[in-house]
Length: 103
Image (tube, rainbow, N blue to C red; front, top):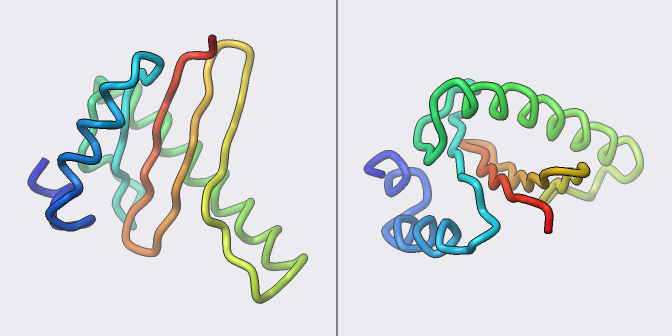
């Protein structure tokens, strides 16, 4: 959680704890600018898999959005499947990924 605090400020740990208290949240991942999971509540293999694919997907979505409107920025990307849902909040220094169970 130390890296989390460095990336997101002093309130980040409380925010991550609050997110993880939601019953539908499976886990959270903080991905650094190089694409490696820095802080996660998931096992390392699952975190690496989500990090790799969702970071790539958010970059593609951001680029597509820039082609539509160069003045717009991607704030969040929500991916919904039958079993799970993932939300990616991109930032130049890190990506926050929240993985949730579908109801």
